[in-house]
Length: 168
Image (cartoon, rainbow, N blue to C red; front, side, top):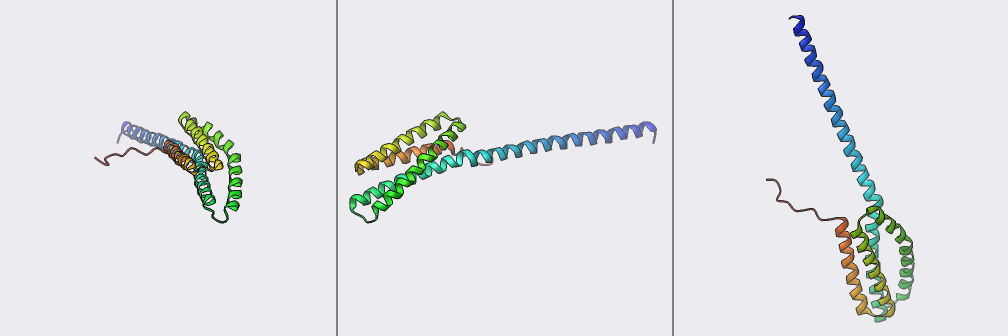
């Protein structure tokens, strides 16, 4: 073996090690960025999206409960006044949470979501007015509209993934 062959082998080994180290570094940086992006997405979903969706779910439950409580009241069921007081307390809690939900909607920066939420909020209050007026048929119509708008809202937040044909 000559000196030139030894230098040639050392250069090849050195370049191989350098390429391996550079590749490892690039992969580590990519993995680190992907992990950071995943954590950021989880934090966003947990702190922004989930509270908004929970508010909309609670709004739907409150609408349904209020409608059926009013139907029971008209039908002369027992315990309706106690349920009405509980409803008014939940409604006050909703008023307190609404500002936080609106702030989260601003963070989401989606004009379509903001519009649907405004429409949903307006329909909910129209529903409440119909219930207060004792018009069950009108309240039923508003209940259906609130449910439809809530579905539209959730559909925009969590769009259904496109269905593919699978592996080709």
